[in-house]
Length: 495
Ligand SMILES: NC(=O)c1ccc[n+]([C@@H]2O[C@H](COP(=O)([O-])OP(=O)(O)OC[C@H]3O[C@@H](n4cnc5c(N)ncnc54)[C@H](O)[C@@H]3O)[C@@H](O)[C@H]2O)c1
Ligand SMILES: O=CCCC(=O)O
Image (cartoon, rainbow, N blue to C red; front, side, top):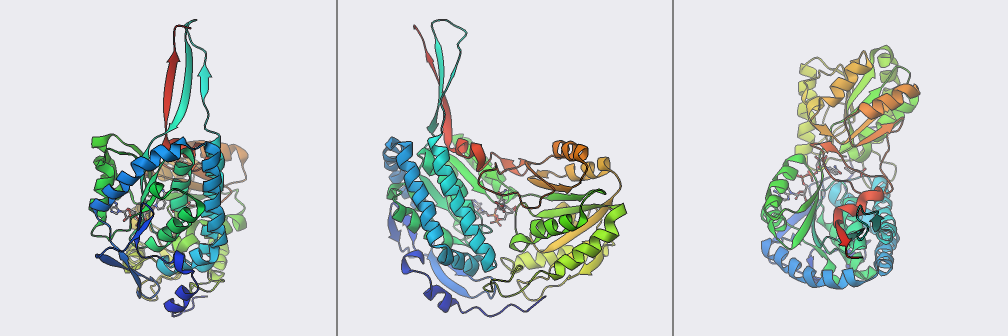
C-alpha cells in the first residue's frame, strides 16, 4: 500500500505540454510579460525547481486595472448571449487540454494525476454552468404601494474584480470565481498562489484563445514576498469593486481589513474544520467509504475535508475495523501513476504539521491504528487515530493532511454541541438512517454545506461556502453570479 514516491522526470512531463500552455510570464492586457524579477515554482514531490516565474509587484496591478477599465466598458456592452458563448468556449478548451492542465497541476501541486484530471472536469463545469447563469440574470417588478409608481430591480455587473486563489485546487478555484464574473460582464485580475501559478497562466492562455478580451483577464503571479503588497493594492484600489478570495482564514481577515477603506464587495471562501458524524443507525460500510473520500481527497488538503470524526460509541469498534480495511485500499506513492490515490503534501511544513499533530494526539491518549509517520519531507502515511482528545490540535485546527482523527460520542445533543463549538462552519457530514434525525441534524449543524449520507458534495450546481469564520458569500449554484453583480432599484414615478 505505502510505496515510496517515484522520481518524476520533470523535463519529460513538460515536453508533453503544448508550448502555449507552459508559461512563466505574467499575463497583463493580453501581453505575456517576462519580468526581470522571478520566483521558483517547485515540484513538491521532490522539491526540484520546475521553472522560474515572473514576480509581479503593485505596479502590475495598476497596469491591469487601467486595461480593465476599458475592458469593462466593452465587455459589459456585449449581450449576455455573446459573453456566454465565449465563457462556454473557455470551458471547452479547458476540457480539450485536460491532460496538459492536469500534468501542470500534478507537477506544481503534487496532486495525484487522476485527481488532477478530475479537477479539470470540475473546473470546466463552472464555465458551462456560469455561461448559462449569466444569461438568466433576472429583473423583477414588485407591485408598488403608490398608484403612480412602479418598482423595478435589475442586476448589473459590479466592475473590475480582484481574485486571489489557493494552491489546493489551482484550476477549479480560478474558474469557480472567474467564469461567473466574466459571464455577467466583469473583468478579472487574478493573483494565483505562488505555489501553483503555472495552471493559472495556462488558463489565461486558454481564456485568450476562447475570445475573452485581453483587457478582461489578467494573471499576476507573485512570490511569497511580493504577495502582500500585490494583495494590498488589489484590496485598496478604488476601481476594483469586488474581491473574491479563497484561502486561509488568517489571510481572509487581513484582506477584509484592507478592503474596508474602499468598501468593496467581498467574497471569502476560507478554512474549515468539518465534522463527520457516524450515528448508531448508520450504514457503516457506506460511511467508511464516504469518509475515505471526504478525508483523503487531495491527500487531505481540501477545505471541506472531514477533520473531526465523531463515531457513536456503540458502533466505534466495528466502524474502526471497516475503516482500517478501506485505508489499506489507498494507494500511496507516485503522483503520476493513474492508480495513486494519496500523493504528497504541498511542502515540508504541511508534513511537519501533521507529524506534530499526531505526536501531540498520542501524548494526549489517542490510539494509533494505521500510519503515523512521514516517509520523507513531503510524504506522510495515511493515518488513523481514535480516542482523540477534544482539545488535541488535530481536532481544534485544520489538519490539511492525510490524518483521520476519531473520537466517540454518546448522544446527538453531545455531538452537535461538540461540532458546533467550532469557530468554523464550512462543511459538515453525517451518516444516519433515521430520517427524523437526518432533518434535525441537517438543520442544527452550523455549517454552510451538509453531506447527509454523502461524503462528496461539490459540484457547480450547488452553492459552495461557509458560515462563521469559514467565509462570506457563495460560489456556484444559482447564486454564484450574485457575488459579481449589484442590485439596482429603479422607481418609475409620475405614471
Ligand atoms: N472555503 C474554500 O472554498 C476553500 C477552498 C480552498 C482552500 N481553502 C482554504 O485555504 C487554505 C489553504 O490554502 P493556502 O495555504 O493557499 O491559503 P493562504 O491563505 O496561505 O493562501 C491563499 C492565497 O492567498 C495569498 N496570500 C497569502 N498571504 C496574502 C496576503 N497577505 N495578501 C494577499 N494575498 C495573500 C496566497 O499567495 C494565495 O494566493 C486552507 O485554510 C483551506 O481551508 C478554502
Ligand atoms: O478546497 C476547497 C475546494 C474543494 C471543493 O470545491 O470541493
